[in-house]
Length: 214
Image: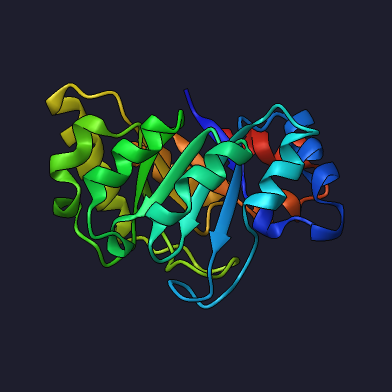
């Protein structure tokens, strides 16, 4: 089943709770929350207090994507704030397996993200412990970037690896996802699609979600 995760990075931050409700009512499966620290990526977005505030008014699945240095220092705070899924970047971690264990111990599903220049070999030994792998189809840190088509091969290889090993693991894709590119990543094997401007910038949000879902 294809799941759609609108990224609130493209939402109106002045009305964030309403923006979360708007896409949830329109059929979104997850709410994708991009956390940037200004170090691992250039921009700064939001922290666990914002997630805690949003949780008070939403029962949505919060898909928290940590684009931060030292992700292990942030796990407990976001889990306590109401995150359901926590994904960190393998490039930012010294002890990835320990962080996966930490996320699960905190009661959340665990995901690892890979930048466009990072090989699948970096997470091969961790796949059996993961609930999700996030393939970045843009370089992290900014919304509205152009989709990097070379990542389709990575998605395809990952899907076959997961199937061959008999694991249960979602493949999420983030970056440049719209009606056209969603078809490509779905065909390659992705089943969780993050979209920002293609959803929040649409006149009809429900129709945009429907088209991206395919």
